[in-house]
Length: 409
Image (tube, rainbow, N blue to C red; front, side):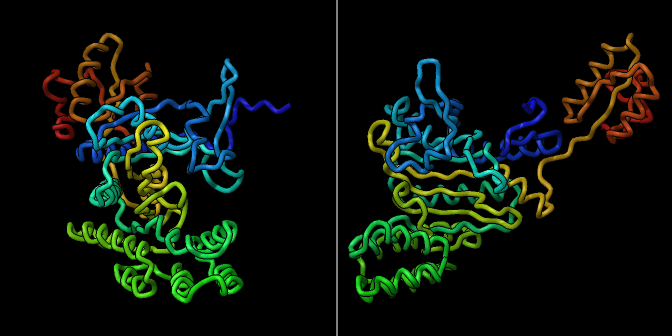
């Protein structure tokens, strides 16, 4: 039997040294961005009851959720996403709080991904939720906050694609095709699989009117600038679909009004999780990272599963994805602090410690030597690219040794 104590599970990783520092830097940048926008931070437990994630219109299939049994025989789950626990908190503990609620988070989530597909099972998510507002400006503000968050982290070359979850439903609800055919149609449009789409459309051609056939055939091709909304509007007379197209246009114009339109595009073929999302939806992509680095949208039916019905919208950012993308683009982020090693004789420990505190208060990384030998201490400092300071050479605790003072003034 294999002894696994030296290993970690598939889909997990140890985060060490510089990578760990970078990750903390990114989380702090995101946290500051949210808090400065009036969002309040919350944390949910790593373990939830499985029922929390197994409600109507759950965003994740049950096979993606890690499950275990507690000492009373109840099914528990590792937190599989953050939006659902926040909806639970909003619908219970924050039920009487002033609305709209502006909540934010930085937390790990756990999902059982297929082995060897390159995806992590432990994912660090960072995001915001606006609960209690159905105003289109809430959707626009969430997208704007997402753009500003990515910019603050150092990303420049990215796009946020926006669509509407109800657009596809409006176009197919009145068609004489069964649920299985509608799902095949949805998947082929979302994946932009034109071969599969053509096959479904032509096999069922007699069930479509000309209007619905034309726009469904064009839907996966309708992505780009604001002009695609005009193209789509010319292809349909479906009143609901036209209203949803107007919603997208309105959000786009709000984002454009503050000069962020270069980070925005329209994708009318975005039709994922349509039972979960209820309005504007969006996904963010950038060079160097294979998946979507940001995703979100309006989900007005979730909070009501835990309390009173409340409209809601938000996004989640893949923190590890940001780090991968920044590494790919070779963008520098987070300050690099100067590092010094303080070597001292044991009788000078107090003096060394006080000097270390002075340097640390200046933002300098000051490490106290653990070596008795000066030679070993110098070798250690050289290997770690640190400045070497011998405490006995300091003239006093308010100023530096003549040979070093220029470095730290």
